[in-house]
Length: 313
Image (tube, rainbow, N blue to C red; front, side, top):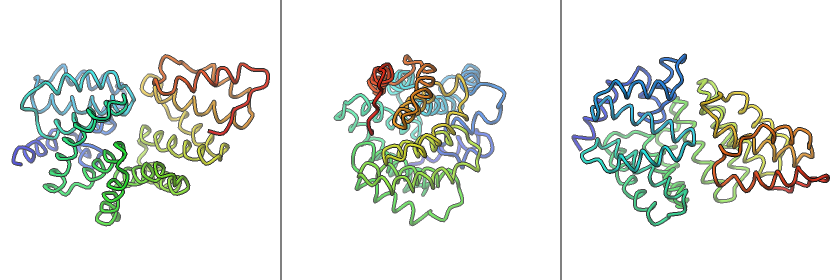
């Protein structure tokens, strides 16, 4: 327990002012805000090149790098780094938890549920201990998120209600964003789409004043997708259009392809076929995640027809 506390203190002294209120201790958006003229990944790589390997600073920067890969959907790079880093011995406790957390999500995404549950259990045990030691509400939300991803919606909801009852009056926009985003995950998994849309709107309202473009685009996309599932295609398209306007070339390429795909679907569902074809022509299928490629191929077929038909999602 002493070691966890020591690592927390070291990170907080080494990070720029303001990071303690971030989504994670390794939040890349907060880290990169200190030099906005430099591309975020370049800034991280420069720091790693200058840091002594396996020093406190090196682990902190590695943590920021992993957060960047995860947030930008660069899962191959994340999987490679996580697998290598898990081979290290005697790593800082919070860093180890982050590795377990990502490894669980990577394996779950590949359909390797048994292996994913192993790492999820390790991460959950660490997160519970960290929450008990430091009463950090964001650790509670991470734990709820892990349960939700693993399909344990009842346990996830119980933790979210606990976080809401204890910390719901917090004025921290990151906490509010994460709380409502994770509520929506559980609600949507349970088929409560209208409730999920309400939670996603609260998440968007919480994060917009921060100006953090990455999180705002996530919030727009989440809300757009929920409205799409509700059949409110026009409203959904508006949110995806807003998200696309905020995305930075080179930094958001993977997420941009996902949101373009949804915008193409929505234009097609609205029978706006000219706009749908124009957006489809802008897409780079090589940047799409594997689970979206079938949807892309289907849209190519539908929009290549003289009489397109895009059914409800």
